[in-house]
Image (cartoon, rainbow, N blue to C red; front, side, top):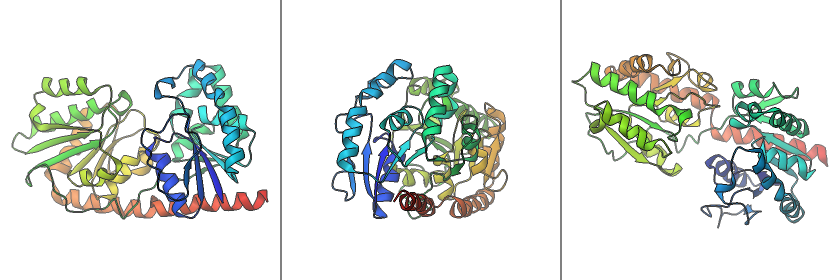
Length: 370
């Protein structure tokens, strides 16, 4: 079977799907609007880049003008379809890639919503809302990674929407002993997120500062992995709060390094203002880390408050501090909640199970189209 993925070739989520599907024996082509930064697919049997001449990243903006640039790639997409001869096209991202998929005229066409394509794009104007509705109407199957995002997508379509989350490879994400950058006595709070406004890293920093003020005797540390436009501001905030000596900014880390960093921490924080699913939280839970998350998007679906972590209102550093403090002061509670967290991930978010579900949809659609 041949599946052509329409999606960002530089996204770790696109890469995970491509690698897993190829490992399942499916021939995968990827058509991306942007050029590949790293040729990660080279020397991997069953994966090919079907658009070597994508745009530079600077082309991509939220404006309607940029959609014209997307349409310019339609001839290249049709050429790729003729060459690759896919059985199914699977669009990853409902707005830009959804429009390109619709204009291709190809069926069967699957469409996965990712987050901002349904939470933000249709709110930019009437045209954007119409484009999203049209793209969803054109799809033969629609997928979401969370119930919250499914509910949001249902505002724009009356079609059935299947929920298949971004699962976690339990063999890679597990509790393990690693060479830590911290002392064994340190209590480490950590996060792995892009340093942008949606992810409210400043709230996590303020919550951590509150815990430090309440417990000057504790050897508390905060590790922030990720890069983004707010890094300088966040570094300045740490200095302003007098905790700069307790905070480490690691910059971007590769996905292969994530399990190692997760196993350096004791508590994982994700206090986002917007979060369609929260795969980083699931990865932390798989490593048996108690998590403190905000009550937004798909996060309260992932975390059972009081059992596999703590759920607090967004923009509430005091309440987040209460939860972090509870875990920091009680190692037995951390251990129990962490164990519950991994058990929940095994039950609901095992990557192999998620891939098997998707493969079943592909197989059934291929049989019906033939």
